[in-house]
Image 1 (cartoon, rainbow, N blue to C red):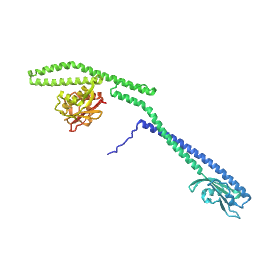
Image 2 (cartoon, rainbow, N blue to C red; image 1 turned 90 degrees about the vertical axis):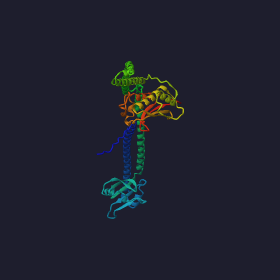
Image 3 (tube, rainbow, N blue to C red; image 1 turned 45 degrees about the vertical axis):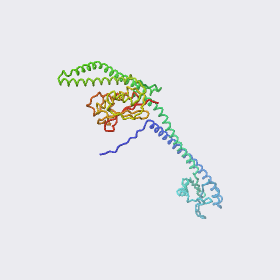
Image 4 (tube, rainbow, N blue to C red; image 1 turned 60 degrees about the horizontal axis):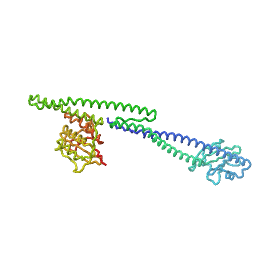
Length: 464
């Protein structure tokens, strides 16, 4: 059964802090804004309704007073009532023996009883004074119905809520802008706080990177904060422990290598004597002497490589930088070590470089010997100008290196799958990498153009 891949969004600490601060600010602002809007809305509406009720009752009392004494001009009475702009009044008179039921609306005639809420009209006529909100012609009104049973009348007055609605719309817009502003300010605060929070982490990262690149004496300074000082102390203790352990291992490797030099020299001398007199021995003994001689030389080469790595690790391998020509140096080294049959692919021009000539020689010789011992020999050496860097590459005729092994083969005592049965100490490429780093460059392996491997060392020109 095939399951769909799941994707997990990973956010950095800074982005998370910005989002958290922004979210908290948004929730706080929206809660406060909503509470403010609702309380303001309730207050304004209550005030408006109180004003409407007082005015409606005052007008109803005026109508009662007038109609108690005279009913000659009821329509004029209603028209002359003082109502608010855009508001209207309607008077209902119950049917009597002399008159029928009738509704009187204000002039000019814009509203009638039919525009009032039917429920309010029915309740008021039945004797229940009340109020009801309704919408007419796109506007909101508050209607008040007052029963006047003493004269058989019912007074209705509608009050526009346009001003309240407009005020609430302004408040709502202001609150929305305020919420957006507070949210943005919260995000800015989160970003600012994240800088102060991440600053110690950046220092820890920088110190860890310094230790990883060889600066074992790198330490953190006190942050002046009790919580962060605990991190500083833990990191410095760890760095002290790592430095002490690495120095012990370096001294051990160096001491062992030095101690092995004397017996190896004696063994080498003895083996050379045996080789010169090998004709005095039987063929089987001659074969044994050859095997011993080969292993002693291999042992000697391993010890020499270990001594060189120990010097590189300790930083005691000083550079003697000078201005040289890279192409001329490569030609001389290949001639000295009898690699004249390997072509050099480089334009015939000046290749100025400020570097230690011995490091260049050691890198090139190790790459050529690696190709000879593990890949059927080098097919060509190439130089490429990359501006601030030169790329020195050796291409071999081997089966190539698997992509999964191209980084690991530069580790000490590491070999590729195709060279497990080959001779060599497994330290040559590690020495190449250390010399490249010492010059400020780097080294890597990649697929060759003809199926083999291509080992590249990038060397800074050191020229301004």
